[in-house]
Length: 180
Length: 190
Image 1: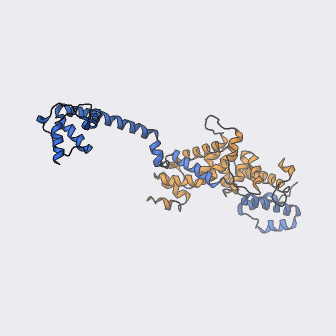
Image 2: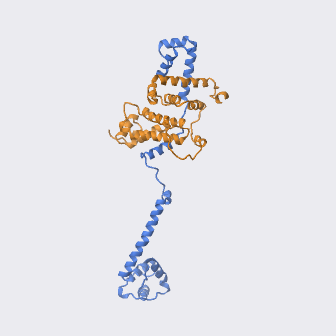
Image 3: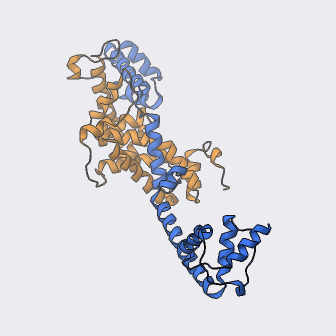
């Protein structure tokens, strides 16, 4: 049977980390059984206190990040630029933008070709292409005329983009170009 | 109470953070999560066998704490409160339902503990029952008093002392069988 002092020794040890009361100290000094038991108690106590039992810092950090995000305490990490361009949402948005742009261009140029002289379209394209110097055609100057091979590229481009046939006073344009 | 900036939050006590959280500061609760994820995760992982279940328990602990932070009793240490929630989740066998994609062996290997010659001490402690391990863990790794541990585990103080005595006695017996370098004899390992 264990010495009756053990309960008191252990209680005091747990509360203060060591036995300090005079009565118990004297008993431990006198009782071989209690002295050995007290030494083993201190050894286990030291071992449990000093032995690390911790998860790796990186593991804890990543779990803490996830929990903070899941609880809405922290924003999820920002998507990198490359990631953004590769994201599904960006691809959808880009597709919608292209389709909407093409639709708008078709409607705009179709409307323009009906209400304004086709020469206006021709002027714009010609000026952009750099082939014909800046000039303007009046509606009266517009005539349907076969466009020769020099204007062919512009003709096709305008047809393709606007869906209408560009026309203009080609001879006038050529003359103007020579003057420049 | 004015809201301190993020850097100053780290200097606040647990209970100051809890009060700030109760007043609506998410940053304050985020700091609580940062402080206690490690201790709670280690505590939970020793009982739940894999990191995923442990993480679920820790997240559920914080979720419950967050949802009831307004009722936090500031006379009660925040740490004890968090461990009480986690302890009850563990005892109740809380486990999020999810398809099991990994084997027990795989998930077990994902736990990365810092290595030490005396690792076997806590490994042995982990093999003890929930009550024994919890008392050891809360006393030696969280520095809690018998009174606090009794409150967390819902046991009386004398019962908690008995559990602590029994657990230490078991470890003391094992300790007598280790060599000078902290290695257990083959007999103990088996």
